[in-house]
Length: 265
Image (tube, rainbow, N blue to C red; front, side, top):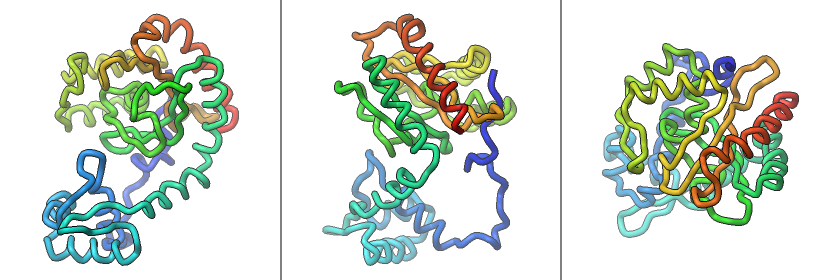
């Protein structure tokens, strides 16, 4: 139904030679990424474990990042500072994809009165690059910069379905899936069948697999040559719209947005 993810996607770029990489930068960024919503405060030992560093090396990276203003320490625990937002802000302001997508989200949300977001695949997760609510909170994950598991989200399944079959099979085979709700599909065979369905029909519908009460429908964002660059969704509370209503009422608008963006991407 759609072409594989664009080679420009960082998860599909050519692997560089190790001699061309700056190990210190790689490890420093890994330290920043060690902090997340579940672990906002970390000790030196915890950072070392999460980043596969010695305790001495983790301490030096943290001290350097503190000197640069990206982390702060208090009573032996470390946390990110607001300066880290500058890294995300640089992408949001300069990246072509979020700048093109955001105006279309405004039109989509205004028409449907439901939340919408766009995301790209990053390892196990989907990172939100643009989002807009319709004035009512549907999920705390619908904001730029948040990341959610790819396997149990509509945007994630669209992006996984766009991978070459051998690559998506390897992705499924290499992971253990923890249920987020009682509805979450965690069996690799069922997930493989779901990805085949998404690939065939051109959209993904996920019903309360990430959060109870959250229903989401998603389509891929395609370049002019048909490569998948990202995914865009509409999210609604289960009390507001049924799964059938998402397909009947929201999918046509999503596909119209998809067509509009394809002329721009």
